[in-house]
Image 1 (tube, rainbow, N blue to C red):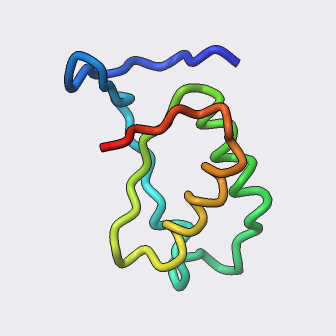
Image 2 (cartoon, rainbow, N blue to C red):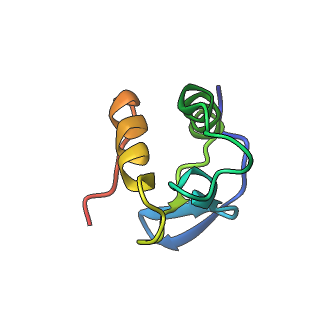
Length: 84
């Protein structure tokens, strides 16, 4: 799928989407009435990545979210991640 979102150029070679997706809903203890289906969450974030949303917020209090982002990033080997 072709990315279809507006981006902001931060430097000559680095841009981010104008919308940054948060991850607090994925954090342990922040789910709504029941446990999250992580397969559904993975699929939702995969769709975000496919559409060009590649900037995600994961504050240090979002327990488990960094690990989730790591898992989905590993599954997207075609991504070019910044090195700085």
